[in-house]
Image 1 (tube, rainbow, N blue to C red):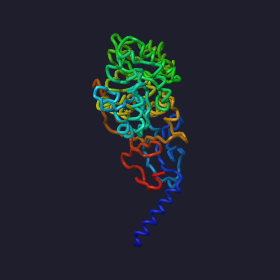
Image 2 (cartoon, rainbow, N blue to C red):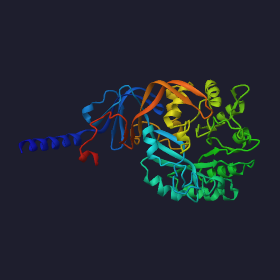
Image 3 (cartoon, helix red, strand yellow):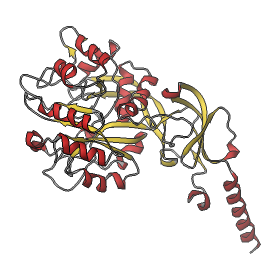
Image 4 (tube, one colour):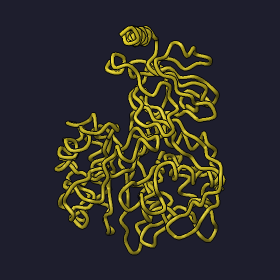
Length: 419
């Protein structure tokens, strides 16, 4: 009986200690890379009530209820994947719109350090409310959306329906759900008309100058991307699949000169955004390697995550980022293209950084050393000596993924955990 009483008193004492501590979580001794705040150094990060409370050296571990041992690891803002497909459902003929080719985000984000995704056109103005209720409202992952200029969304052949591309209705829904809708998407249209792009751009203008993401379906001969960049898109609009090399789409690197086409550099100066959007067959080393060698880095790294790409050469966000490391991008630039830049592109600059007072979305990454084969869909393979791996992810101040139990204690008293 005496032993039980002592144990109870010890637990009560521990609870009081936890309540008295200044921080919920302290990330200790990690190499912080935060491009927005120009931090590239070993620092500690304290989290309280879901927010970043302090970023400094040598924060006392006694002030925290839980301590994450990040020594030898990289600490970054939570990663942002701005090209994903998450309107999963049960309709086999609907593909990415309430269909079986999309994926529920939580199962594929946190284990990659991703805390925010942007669904790229799976829903349209007619179907976005269902997507919000089914996925956005029920996910721990923060989910935004580019809605499709096609009212029904990404329903396979239905995406060719010019009659369902309504700028006014798209803009009305975007304004109604402006907390979640960050832009518009042109997806998979096959033909020589510019109407899908022009209607999406008009929707963007009507909705308050929010961006458009363009994913050409293809045509023979291909639509000229110089005309796309210079005559149809606005500064801030996004060209996804930027390293794709398909016969039905014009690509950015000239295969004869192995140089980025001059008008592509001009488009970048004009403010056109170049996004990876890796996908199943929309990334080729034959485009990416010469571009990276020439210093043409993508503005943003994204996956085009769906059931096909995740089991093909793309795999996941960190594998995609690792490929850019292997091609010659430095780690800080890769992190910038996966955090700060996409946050700016979707006009949510409160994200993608570790500023004091911001919501605590954090990725803790390990750079594994070994022998890795990083290949594309054509079969071309890079032998890499380094690969990124996620050790721990924090979303809104809560630990949502811990690969190797690097937080101490692993559990905290309920009185503190329930706050």
